[in-house]
Image (cartoon, rainbow, N blue to C red):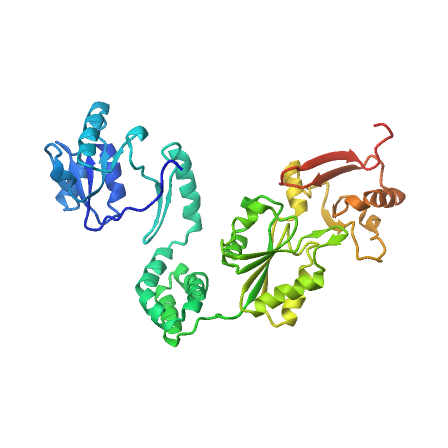
Length: 431
């Protein structure tokens, strides 16, 4: 980073804006959201800025800037619209030790103004070090849609109650208490506009001194999708950031684990074909054992846990232990492969049926009857089938599949080393 992001305290301080036109007015609109005293330094002010002065929202300084102008100044904006005047005022401000931002002159800026998502007191600032303001605004738009409108009101209430929480909630339970506040029923009530009911529920829990759900472990089977971290669902990311311990598979991309809480414990339980690091029953036992300690456990799987991910076995183990369990869907390999190939898994008028099957079975079990799914209008998707490719081909040909039937093969979709191949079911020799 060439700039270190931080927030400047404005209480009891002033912000100097040198300029009296539209560029200065834009900065004034921005800083009006703070509690700083605004000093407008210009011989003349446009109607908008003059209105601020008339309403007592800003002071007007028509004369030259001097040391007194910068007393207790948190920041100085220079926005006269004249390059020569901007340069001269920059020199004056720097001579008096001011922190300066010159509009449209990154080379003269000690500080740059970010794009801001304002849910006071929750504030998100997006900066690009002055290189790409349009990108910053685009990111701001995306974040605006993610943050609930009333999250600021909830954060303000939490701030007023921090002392009471410190007195009544044991230190070991406070993180769980705040997680309940910001992610449970209280947050839902605030988001729905029922702030009074939400505040009453929070204070009621505080009076009892008991954290709802504290000490009770839980398990989440989280789908990591095909690989790329930005393909995870928001709920998957939330669980990763709350997890105390994460059991993860071989195919989970490292950048997905980077989204987890830094102090979460990570346990590798990856399976290689024919050489399992841990048998499934031992994985189930370890997951349950950690949840019984009152920990929040994530079982992180590539793709979707419910599609050839043994979610049923792991849910059954959790339920048998009396532990709550939740499945967080992920983008499955079939969907990811279709996206990378630029086509749909179904096509109107061509394919109206989608079958997901696998080339692997339990040891000792007979091979699946893949050909029973072989019907016109059907897309047939094979998971984990590299080792059974010859057997699958023989089975399909024996039951009437044409040798020139198109087959798409996808490996490591969305990961480094991705391979996509289209071929006939039975290529001609030397073809």
